[in-house]
Image 1 (cartoon, rainbow, N blue to C red):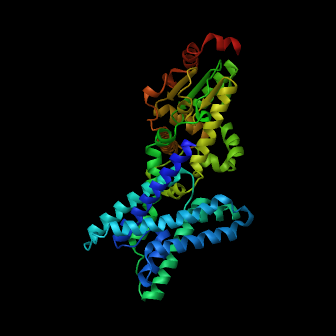
Image 2: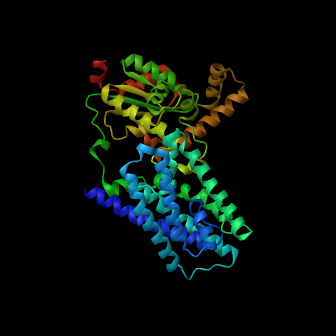
Length: 424
């Protein structure tokens, strides 16, 4: 009960912050956020405030949700009605509080626009953090996704573009010119979700700080099981070494098999997962491309895959002694005491020769692929663990595989408890 009260408090505060952000963006006079664009254009023509039109528009979206969902329209959806009235009131209140803001110089307008995007991004993050009620705009998108099984990110983009185009059309109809929809609308559409997602990623401790951690989230003791995690540079032979050790120790082995297992729990095809797992080219670009998921209760595809594979690692470690290659397993099992974390590297010439042989590539192609894969793995690892891939402090052993498989095997087996070897 106490946690529920906290969540509603966070939601109400977030709603006010949302309103403040919308008001700041609107005051910048460079357009407003896509979801507020239609109410704003109408408020410029008719004698009703932005807040009042926001309420009218929200009620329309709630009615459309009822039409779309039918019997699946649940009682909690009704909560959107009082929330809409509160949101509208907060917007009008904030517009009054910011009466002194009337920037006329373009750079000042743009600064207020950016501040507004930052504030609105914080508000969106707080709304999703509370996880009690969705605003009608986001809930409408979720209804479409539920009804027609569309992809949330794409649907949200289409919704925002549609709202902007309708607002622009209404502006031409009522004013004979483009009024209320400008470059600020596009900037807000890109930045707000990005900021909300960035906050969630950079400050993952906030939910625990506010609401505590549930017992289901607590790390499960490893008991007598022993695990080995192997991170590796591309072409260093991590897969082959892991498979060899697993057979030697009679441990369960997880590498590419996790793709099929994750496919079963995420609904994505194995081919889709294979293209995405352990690969992020640039964290900022990834956040920008998936910023629409800041409004959703569903994770972006890569996040869903990471969460599914992390659960596979934890469940497997609870069942038996295992060897995991990649998949940030060293981080997922960071609280487990009976876990040996290893990083494998090798000289570039040796890796190039290996990839040329195994993948039938030229020397130039092999080198390019090694550089690309290492870069993607490092970015992926840092994105999800907030650690640096290959940094010695993250591992018990950092080994150059050029010393030979036999020597590596001896080194690793010396670190495996005798009781574990005996059991295997």
